[in-house]
Image (cartoon, rainbow, N blue to C red):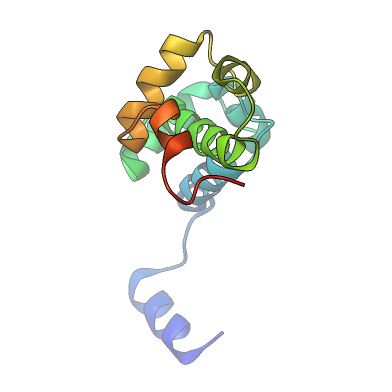
Length: 126
């Protein structure tokens, strides 16, 4: 343990396992493509869905669903960059969106432009 870590631990105490969970929750929701639902997230963390919701509200400030949706939209943006010829409906379906219109609304809200505009933006061609 470094001097700083020892000093902080002496003053505020050790971090509890529950306090570490929000970091794991954010990491899992933000990087694990197999996590598609809040139930998946709860199972991966070995806690209840209620605990996932409580931890997200208390420590993160976004709902678990919003965290998962953000990752799916980031993956969809990467898909558009890496396969600009792919149809937007196939990109939407590949990333769990019920239809292209729903996907386009969420994409625009999150990234500030429609998927079509994003695909045509400079630097987003292969």
